[in-house]
Figure (cartoon, helix red, strand yellow):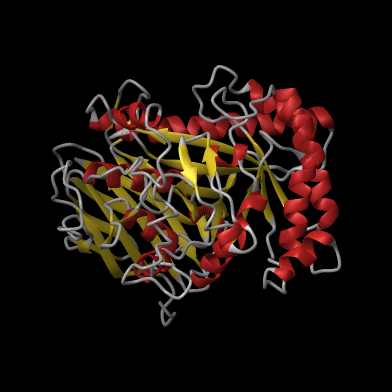
Length: 508
């Protein structure tokens, strides 16, 4: 299967916000307890955080992390997680029908974020609570001192405030399942007033308002229009969520859901532009795609379990075993975020550890990388810089969710400071290799400095505690760069990362 492609140095999409490679972690299942935090574990530090998990997290180079939820936040009392641990109450978490011990709260999580060098993105409860509690929470977190809430933080041993600039105004407020679910105009007005209050505390705060929980919601995309009409001038981002699966065992249709995601982003971009024009506003709003991942392997089974179990503490929940097919999908989705980086400035994989996560950790045992860890890692490490357009001319296919889908999925990022162009390529074809011929205009001196590949695995292959490296990238062969062209063979069902030195003598 021959594919021609073209990349031009001057055909730029956007400078990529580093926060495109962010993450999300919620008080849910074993994400926090026996995920990142497990006192008594052989790898636990003095604060109870697992060093083995932290090392895997640091290797992802995550810029920001959304916390503490998620559905959890809509009935959360943040005050329960501060002060002496022995005095903290155990509460019932209504979202996931479990017990929350509150042994990890904002100060403990801030310690972990500092340990892993990640900026915090905090969510406030606009479900069961509202503006006043959001203001108090923010004052506790970001004000230096001399007030009730800031001095309370200092009495808890935290003298300096946390420099938190990103604040999520609730979670999935369009969802009837959400504690404190609201109608669009009702929520939009509350979000507007909350954003004003937070920005009165710190004018540099970025407020993230809730968009649709997914693009199949009956209120989509009117929800975004109605909400933004209430709060456009006072917010900076609108959040989108979407989860993916392949319950029909149709690989090509599964991969094409990336095209569906592109339409979702494009539609909400249009809504943003419409509201901006209608309100004659001067400010721009961007998209924060702050929940995305594959979620289907255990979804139905877990739904039955959590609706009937008797309020367990940190239960096994949504612990997906990701396979090679899922890794190919995530690789393509990262490419789509790069291609849409003019609209999507922040995106968060949901979640980070144990719960639908790239990292798994046994209680008292080992931690390992899941298959999806690698495409997420490669994008985070090498997808920093300017997104470039890649024109692809090759065979396509039709399926249920989209027509005329390219078998070759391609994205490119130019790191001008390092003098490196990175190509992210996925061959979706089930049987045929791609015979690639890509013209590099403006990069005539390009030379290949690294080629990583994931190929040759069965689509259902997974990693586990007893086989942590069963599916992992390795050095690729069969692709070269000469006279400003990338040529070579990309095996069927394969993922490739090609790093090109485009500036002779540049550091790589």
